[in-house]
Length: 81
Picture 1 (cartoon, rainbow, N blue to C red):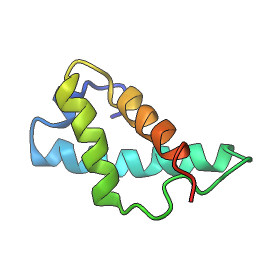
Picture 2 (cartoon, rainbow, N blue to C red; picture 1 turned 180 degrees about the vertical axis):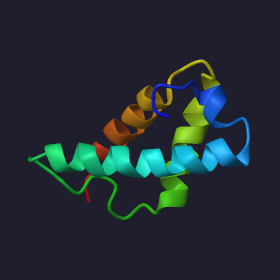
Picture 3 (spheres, rainbow, N blue to C red; picture 1 turned 90 degrees about the vertical axis):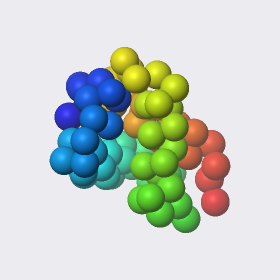
Picture 4 (cartoon, rainbow, N blue to C red; picture 1 turned 90 degrees about the horizontal axis):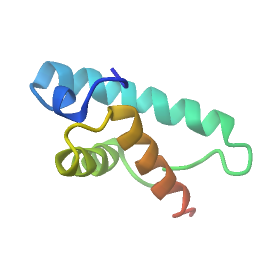
C-alpha cells in the first residue's frame, strides 16, 4: 500500500482502511528503529495521525503514501513530549 499514490489510498473506504493499517505498521516500524526517541507520536491518537497524512495527501495526490507518512513521522518526531 505504501508505494501506491495518495489518490489511490483515498479513492474509497476499502483502500482507506487498508492504508490506515499500513500507516500504523509504518509508524511502529519507524519507532522501533529510532533508538534516540522510540515514542514518536505518543499523545496523538490514530485519527489525528491519519488526518495529518490525509492533509498531505490531499495537497499532493500523486505523492506515494510512504512519503506522506514519513513526512508526518518526521513532523511528529519534532514534537517530542
